[in-house]
Length: 342
Image 1 (cartoon, rainbow, N blue to C red):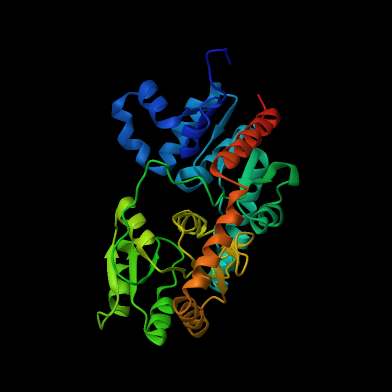
Image 2: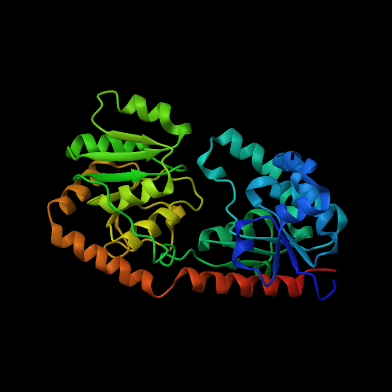
């Protein structure tokens, strides 16, 4: 590539954080292919094909693992050129599925995905130790190809962003993925505490059924500003998660710690390495409404304990920030570029 070119054609939001190394895919595709092509980029297989075609003259390509990225790996493996960089890679939580699904995945998809990854990937980043081991054992990737860079729990709030807390005395919970609404509603019923939640449209039907008596304040598809206000005004935040055997909840945990709101969290594998009981959060077993209700009640009854948990969580998060994270990601991308094949 010439000196006026960047090194990585990147179809992931990290491109904005790595301007010295990357070219964002969509603006580049619009410039090279024309505006007529933009609607077709919403179709994941076509997006993957366009990304790889336009990325031929780049040193490496960073597909979006969640938006055609797996297909991009299959296509790139056919060329034999190992030049893909996968960022923030969270694989399917196959272990949470039924035995038939697990069996079919293991014999039909896993071997082909493993071969594709081994032939196409120069570097892959994960968020937990478990996921690092998973990509080695499930797909046969080498340890050298996989880099663990954990999610930071500080540095996401803009200093100038003043959040006006929502009013009232309530416990708040929210999320779009891995939410265990059944356990949460049962715990709130046991504990009798005022609960406010923000859910996705996808979960709204279930949430309405659980809230048949109308005792929970339900919000759906709230804006980021509204969500931040609900977090800031809460006495406690409950991060009630299903065990899905993949990363989940890190962003919500970070938002609460930065807002100074104590967290009660499910001890799931998706938060492995992030939860320290009594430090980053008060930790309870998953799918245990009695334990959740008891832990929430104890903290609601003890303002000093809530303040102590908030202080310890902030101290825990202080040593590793968003800026540290993206410096580590930049180092990972540079290392992957050194391994990428021309």
